[in-house]
Length: 207
Image 1 (cartoon, rainbow, N blue to C red):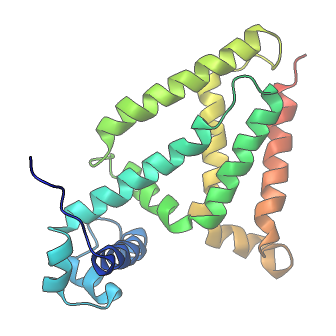
Image 2 (cartoon, rainbow, N blue to C red):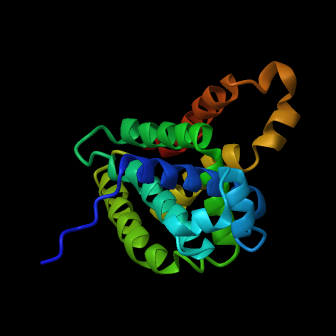
């Protein structure tokens, strides 16, 4: 039985350096507009050195978009079916806003992938993501049937949360430009989270 190849600390650090540089370039130029040379330059290394760690641009991109999809699933997986429904939904919205604040490059990378037709992750969207969304939609439906939240389409509720929270990452320049210097600082994410929680929860209070 072959032993797994153990990477050295330097190899791990170099790989992280390349992935971080690639994230910056891909999020700015998209997959088609990015070259290995650009990534190597951003990482501060030669192209041959970069290709020692990763075989191609496709491999780097695939790692990044797959990582982002799984990070998107994490807040959803944290919804507690035994928790108070409105609090769980509010918590999910706030976590999504934190991701928009802390990981804007990753969000733009993911958005570009979807706009291009999701060539790298379509299988995961139809598989792992859909399975998790189906699970949460079923949970929302149970909460509706029990009278804990108002009856709405559970899938479109999820889409609405995704769209409104991710807006603050993908269109951050527009948000800051419109809000201006007084309201466009770091507090904009907290203000947005409070608004979105209030907006969604008001529509979910049982009538």
